Image 1 (cartoon, helix red, strand yellow):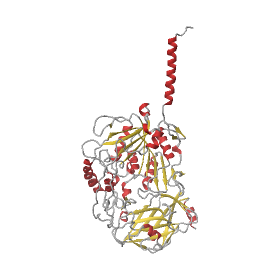
Image 2 (cartoon, rainbow, N blue to C red):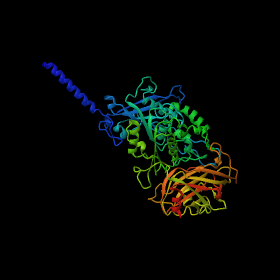
Image 3 (tube, rainbow, N blue to C red):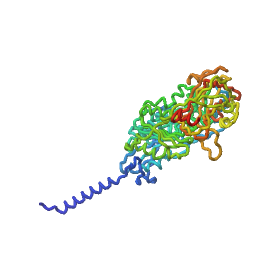
Image 4 (tube, one colour):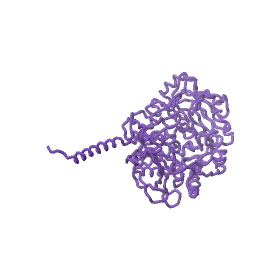
Length: 614
């Protein structure tokens, strides 16, 4: 055997050293870590002082500010430094909003005046407050970054059209609010439509993105993920909308009735337009003229409240056919702003389409994300393709009445598959307290109420006797009754005028008050309708005073256990002070008890209900 000379030995040793060092370095490169189906905090990513924060503009396919150029959306990016130094590619969690750059201040006349008769022209227009834009580049928002970047995600934000430094005009549910996030997702998936400036030609690419994008957000910020998903854009793999507005008709109208969202009496779609229009001052006049004073004023119809082409174009249920993203909905049953039906209707449609679906409901009001661990598992599965079995878990998670929001109870679905309809009949005595029972009473006289909007719904429910409402109650419950799904009212009524508000509350009595009372304790669910739309949601017809009409509609979805010792009651009245228009008192509503029923979705059905009420 020949002897190796010293030079060859040194070269060989160096090569071995280099190989070992390279392998060691490669093994030490930062990567996302997954344990028990969740993305874990990675120490190398948990370095906020080293995160790379930049902003850019993404070009869309539309021009909604009338300048003859395609609108560009302002985008910011927050990513671990390893995506630059080590060539690391990561999945993206993306949030978009019209709120990031500030909103207008509500003035005394910025809402519509609700003091008007039903089915009449609104008394006058309202003020249009302007928005003073806020925010500094390159940071559009800090939302999500401190939870997700350290777990191996890149966070992206964009201001929606006509807000902040994004071009265009707000349309409040128009097609540009779907196409804008689509354009951003396409850029994140490799499309060459990113620019370093609002008007320049220098390109920028998302070379650090895997192309897998998830979206989440609350309220309007939860609407935009759904809007993006309805485009069918390929890169959007999963969304978690929280209390999303899925139909602006259902937000500002109810079964043909002009109805405000809770807490914002007199708000309508044009008011929301003004509230968010924080885009370039010199371009706002175009949107005001074309969108607000043109399209909106022509289509919104505060006089009739009918469902029309304008509202249909702002109803995401009508646009779901292309949707591919895995859907995890979140909502509160006692959200009287964006009501629980908004998530329910989309969830059921997605479920029917065969998409991966999950829904989380809590017992509180507006907002409320699912537990973080559930969100983590959802994004881990669909953005990193980790086989954590989330798609095989129960589809519905309901926070029970005395539990915390991070401790929901799993169910096979919502409504509870064990629930079935129990039809109840009304027995005379509603000005005091008539009865609700499973057996009808024959040949009853009609009962009447007189509208008076000055009396709140809660005061009507609590009153021992009132000419201004009708109340019908079950016997005192001997056992708890679990309701899950949609309560339905089927009523035969007559009005003394050509038009009237019609309101229904389902309540638990006696009314609970004081420090210990919870939001859910008294109002189980509620609903509103316009008797003029008894035959058609798209075409109202004036009522003939004294003529009876059949009206049927669902109350808001709910899942609640009514404890023993309570009575379930239905309160029927006309104008709801917190939600409807405020006509002058005096309209009489007559109810034909022989042709009026209330249907409750009772878990374990009629047997469980009769056992609890006998």
